[in-house]
Amino acid sequence: MAILANRENKDVLKQRLKEEKIERKTISFYRYVNITNPQELRDNLFKVWSEWNCFGRIYIAHEGINAQMSVPANFWDAFVEHLNGIEYFKDVPFKHAVDGNGKSFYKLVIKVKEKVVADGINDPDFDPSKTGTYLDAIAFNKALEDPNTIVIDMRNHYESEVGRFEGAFCPDADTFREELPLVIDHLHGQEDKKVLMYCTGGIRCEKASAYFKHKGFKDVNHLKGGIIKYAEEIKEKGLESKFKGINFVFDERIGERITNDVLSTCHQCDAPCDTHVNCKNDDCHLLFIQCAACAEKMQGCCTPECVTIAALPIEEQRELRKGRVKNGPECLAVYKSRLRPNLKEIIKNNLSLKNV
Image (cartoon, rainbow, N blue to C red; front, top):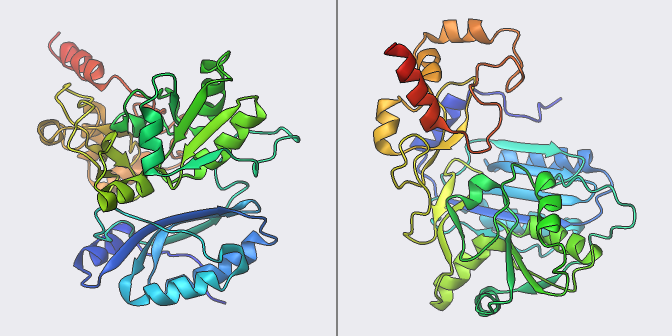
């Protein structure tokens, strides 16, 4: 029986990708559709796509599919034909990465989930198919010019921190599940106003727009294809980009630049910076913004404690991690939440203690 998962070491896979000579396409797609047997579909897709050396992160649930992928160019036509041959996904629209270098994922991961986007909605009367109005880049730009329009960023705080539409309300939330009630509460009493919402690829807004309508909002609109499609359209049509900065993406690139505007600062020194990194301490991996100077000074880590741990021989690090749950209450991470940690203050206090 074939092993329907990749068990190779990630460092080996990353090095293999780095040395690869073939051209790849980085794409994303999603569709809300009733899938009868997600596990069977998952296994069939893994068999075919792994043979073609496709990489990516794909979630499948009874409610549909959400996929971000890297597909070898020489298998692109076969990939599209295969996907169109599955009734669930016939003619599904693709969003293509702006940079197009293809070095975005290093292995294939396909998971069966309860939902393709965890939303925390348990209302039996909610119908996710009753979505808001789709707007393309031209219509979205025009709608933004109305001062009475409310613009909502339906992404997490670490996404909006480095890039967003002008004037958007950006909830300080760590997950889509947390964000929905925050936005509803923020807009209380404004149900008659025109609402514009956007997200990375469109999948969160698809459901959020239906939920807003369910909650009584009259004029709900969302950016078709999300920021990824918007970036494609403004480039193709020569439009002004009202989205500023970087579009955070969930692959090895972490972000793709839409404009040269830098909206955020280094979490360790406050210098203008919009480069997201993960802490080099493998038992931490905190996602934070770090400038080149701090990356050198802190050796790619978030705090002095993590610098110390990351500098240990790998055998000692593994010994420290034994019996611990990754990101659990006993893990070696200085922070358990990704919600904007005050790294500058922690570093300052640490240095003060050393000087006592």
